[in-house]
Length: 199
Image (cartoon, rainbow, N blue to C red; front, side, top):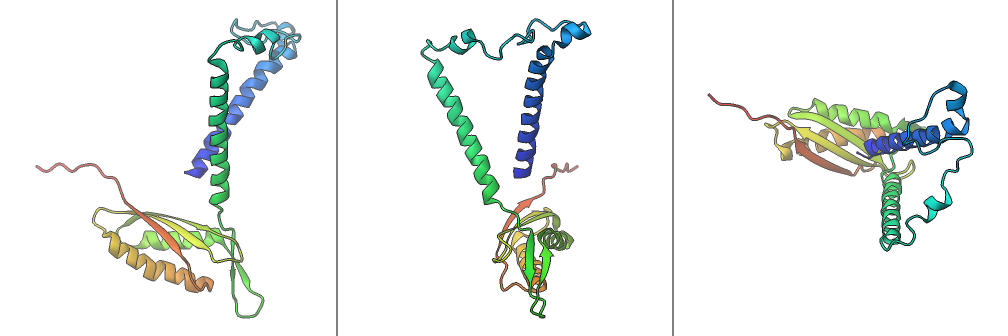
């Protein structure tokens, strides 16, 4: 979900900056006069001598009683959203690499995404699992943690599936990577399906 939020925020910020830049740049370069076209009446700027924010625009609402509370409320909401976004970036740190003891004293490096892919593929190959998503978090030199999302078919039992995934998938990944332990948080949900009509 965080990846989707990031993409939406970046897309909206990019569109907003593009629109604002175009609204200022077109009249600032005097393109309507040079290229022979007219700007619509609602366009905020009309020529190269226009200012972005006039004195009348800056002081228009200052004497109204509702103005300052609205300004502070909007700024407070924006600050809270930006802090939430920043904390979400820091909290869900994806593990890039896992150090593996190769037995020769040198060690080896295993890509975190490769281990995630193997865990997800093993989970999807189990009977009753419709989908799986795995995210490894932590730091390179500390014990990694796995966040696993399993989507089960209607006939699958959550307890049995969880026990099998723990005994097979997680245990195999832990042994292959040479980890002492691999703590995991597994979230299980059922695949959505339409109601069946009985005749």
